[in-house]
Length: 624
Image (tube, rainbow, N blue to C red; front, side, top):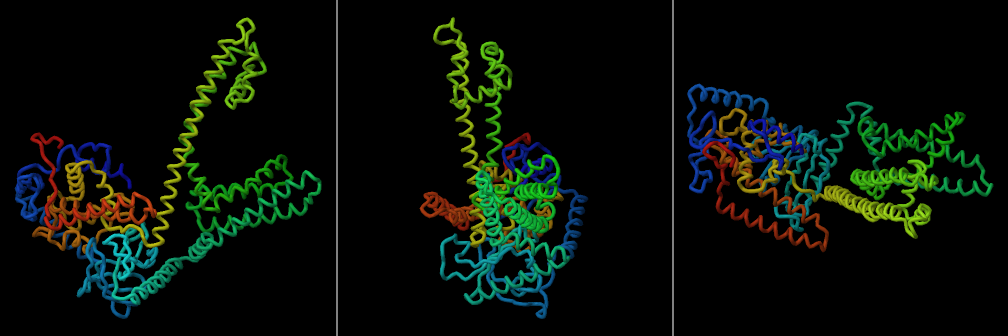
């Protein structure tokens, strides 16, 4: 999520600088003046005694527009409604002749299962309301990443339910549905299995049609599937390991004089040709940017290029050095084995903090080397005759190798058995470098390596959960809710919601239409993007109960809506974390307790639906 972009955009919209404490942070001036609507802003007079906006007054906002402003707003709304009919409709459900499969299913809409008509065509999976021929949502088949069978009710958490009959459709993040997950429930296991098979077959066919747009793309997709397969990786690893064995055998026989250079040269040429062919396949499959932006691919390119240069340019002087570099081909094994690749990635991530610690230690060593030349050049030119010699001497001292003999040679006989200046020089160097800085380097390395390793394991665990169908359900507002979740207090949350409302309210009318919500959320740079349909907006607004008479969302309703969605978002995150918790991990119990607390709060919310506090306004328009 581009938090910095969101902060800048929201701050620019509000006309004030936005603190860097987190995204969607509170405004220094609330967006709504108290008492009446001024300059197109809603009135906040209709609030309860505790300062909370009343839900009974949705759509009953008093106004003080002049006639010109009112006429202008009404004209824009009429134009918007006419545009919605043309641009925002998803069309009609295809005819029966275009339908491959159709069924009445239950679809998970936020927190409720609702009846929907599910239609499978050659290009899309279409969702429609019961008894309506209008398309409420669609999923392009070529953007389906996987279809998984649900063994639990996503709304009830990740507990196993043998009677649950459902399946989930996962979409790609950069596609039409922005990485959303759609959950459906059928009436029998047989129908669930039929949907799994039909969707898998139709999705594969749709991807094949998309790939056939050009012959080059078709062959590139095949090459990408081939080079990404587990069999390809295993064979590549075996070839690299075999090359290592040949290098060891060649080095061993060199010393005994029994080496047959023709055999080893032939094997070297064979391995070079095989590795070149493998690199060519990877280059073709991932051309252009995916290849050159990957460090492991670049490493393979350098090693294979050096091997080819050493074979084709054998007559050039100095080519023997390139032949030595062919030994590094064994390091390609790191890119083939996942466990080794994880280790190297963690070390690479920890390299920058470790480098900073090394720089500090290097500065201390350089300082002591300069002092050593100035103090002891005349006494021992062999150890402190120049800066480079002194630097090597001090490096040798840091390893505790011969530093006692070096120091005693510098003693002045007139100073007694111990020369104070020499002793102070070496003792302080050993204390600072060996006892302090070297352990700091090791500590920084271990700390950053552990952190990077945990991130790598978390990434692998998420990938495994996605393959098993245990990924957290993604709803339309989840990327925005993830930004809102960084609040500190209830008032801070209200200010953030008010900021978001101000950004979405493009015409400053004090209420949001569907077009404003859809267009405003789509412009916010979050990953994945936000695309909200009319059906989803109806669900979010409790089947339009939170809309006013004009079919728009007032600020009080929007505040209530976002708080409730944030609570559901926390429940989903807790349920997902419980599924990722390893067996026997005590954090699983803590997560379960927190989830039960959120469920109880949700039950209380349902029993007593009230809105959240509105932003307070100080007399001078200052910050709350």
